[in-house]
Image 1 (cartoon, rainbow, N blue to C red):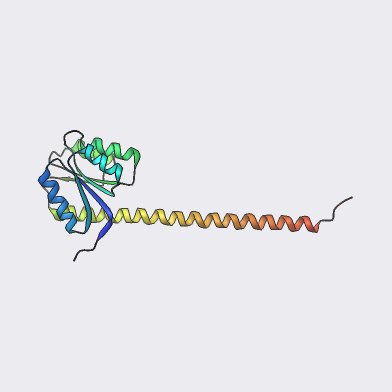
Image 2 (cartoon, rainbow, N blue to C red; image 1 turned 180 degrees about the horizontal axis):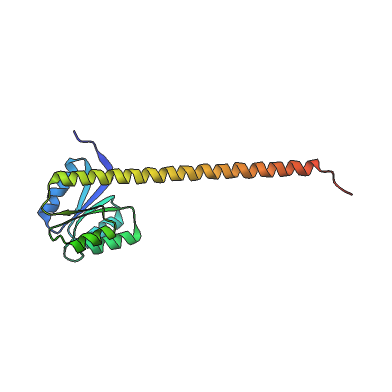
Length: 169
C-alpha cells in the first residue's frame, strides 16, 4: 500500500496524450495528487487556479512551449519546482533549463524508476522548504515577543527612575 501524498500536487504537461496519461496514472499509483495539461497555456490556467508543487513538462508543445510556461510561472511564484522531459534534448536547452532553476532535465525515453526518484527528491526539497518557512515564522514570532518584553522592561525601568528622582522646585 502506498502512502498518500495529498498535500503534494503534481501537474504533468505534455501534448502527447498517451504519455501524459501514463505518467499521471503512474504517479497516482505512487500516492500523489496528479493532474494533466495538454500544453503550456492549459497548464498556466490550471496553475493559476490551484498552485502545484511540481510541474513535469515537455519542452516542445503547441500553443506554449515548456520553457515559456516555466518563465511565466516563475514570475509570479518561485515555490513551484519543474522537471523537464524531452525527446529533443540539446546542451542549449539543458543549460537554459538549469538557468531557469529546473530541478531536473530528463531525456525521453526514460525509465519510470528514474522519474520516481526525481519526484521523491523534489518532494523532499519542497518538504524542507515548507519546514524552513514554518521555522522562520516561528522565529519571527519569538523575536517579536522578545522585543515586546524588552520594550516593556525598558518602559518599566524608565517609569521607576522617574519615581525615584526628587522633583525640583
